[in-house]
Image 1 (cartoon, helix red, strand yellow):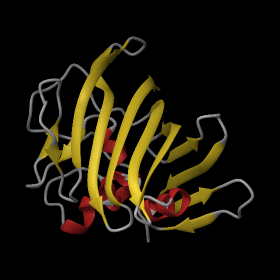
Image 2 (tube, helix red, strand yellow; image 1 turned 120 degrees about the vertical axis):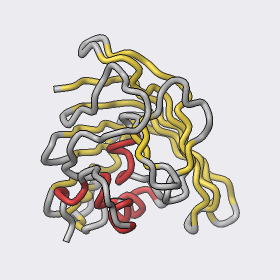
Image 3 (cartoon, rainbow, N blue to C red; image 1 turned 135 degrees about the vertical axis):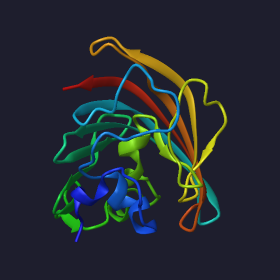
Length: 209
């Protein structure tokens, strides 16, 4: 059973909680061992932007480009993926009872694993379970250290599940007054599904509630 309450960032994690159950549910404010920034983790936030991916399928290079919206509250997350023309391709709802994928002209699909649903929708792995923290610059490093990336974090960060995360640029949220929130995030991983997967995420809107 998928439980958002098990995803709180805390000490003494087991290896199983380092993936979906840790990062994509109802979590408390993450702690960090690095420098404290003027902003804090936001449990309720709306984030929007652009997403692109490059990968290889059937020995042929492919790419995907679109936009996304991320609507997060303490109890749930709603992710919407759109084509470059604004057409909604998939909507993923995550609650304490599971994840639901909705696509045009398809019956809703449900599963305890939101990353599996994203793979079904796109055909390539989108790390939805990690994005709850990555969008706000919190990362679990390869050695299990909970860290808060900063504008001084220029080197790629290797995660426990073999992603390499680079925070390329930053921005200030004028509405909330928060400083140094991510603007561009590059993500890379060697996958079984599509070989080397390279993604770029550019945040264009950020609204706390």
